Amino acid sequence: MNTALKRIIFFALIIGFWEAGSRFGLWTEVVLPSPTSVFQALASGISDQTLIIDLVASFKRLLIGLGMALLIGTSIGVLLAKSKTADDTLGSVLLALQSVPSIVWLPLAIMWFGLNEKSVIFVVILGGTFVMALNIRMGIKNVSPLFIKAAQTMGSRGLDLFIRVIFPASIPYVVTGSRLAWAFAWRALMAGELLSTGPGLGYTLRYASDFGDMSLVIAVMIIIGVVGAIVDQLIFQRVEKSVMKRWGLES
Picture 1 (cartoon, rainbow, N blue to C red):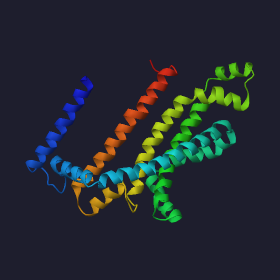
Picture 2 (cartoon, helix red, strand yellow):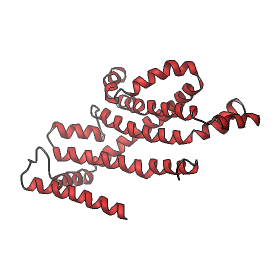
Picture 3 (cartoon, rainbow, N blue to C red):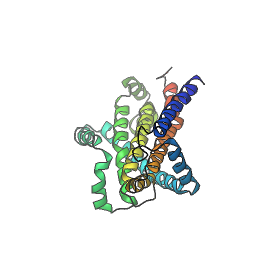
Picture 4 (cartoon, one colour):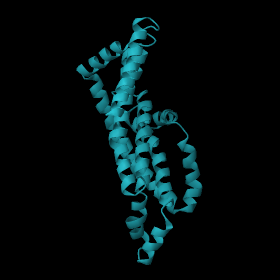
């Protein structure tokens, strides 16, 4: 309750200063609309279901792209961890690609797939794949040799060893990788939708910006930030903490 109260007071002060600045003319509505204008734009978008349709469309793309990113990233991560040749070659490329922003891939995606759903989903997949692969690789490589030797003395080998010992021991890294993949994929989705044909939150953001509707721009930005925070804190953060405690990595 103490933490929640602090947050409420903090955000109330920010909104209060924001509203006061708008009313006293410290900045114009064109530069930074007042909270009242933003709330009206948000309420209007929800009442006519425009923002709801955008949110559903964005989550549809996200679920497809993130699901494929987790699957592909896990497969690549296992390959890098189990094959030194792959780690020395493909691993170095993966580290380089990890530093490339997802939006950079969009022109190439449009050339390959056209200006459609496939381009956006492709960017989302790339946004989550690399970070997931690197976390899986790290998790498998950091499994204690004592666990592996103990399992081998009891006759566990090959696939059985991987399923019973190596993969379960690397679960904390899998969870952390999934959480980071979600964050990167969410950002990649918004970047991809900026050049999409809609519907979607990113598309509406660009549409509102093109027509100078800054109230709607900020309203969409708030939705993007709130959704990202809610999913991260209520789902991924809780799962991560639970796994860390169960694996004895956190008191």
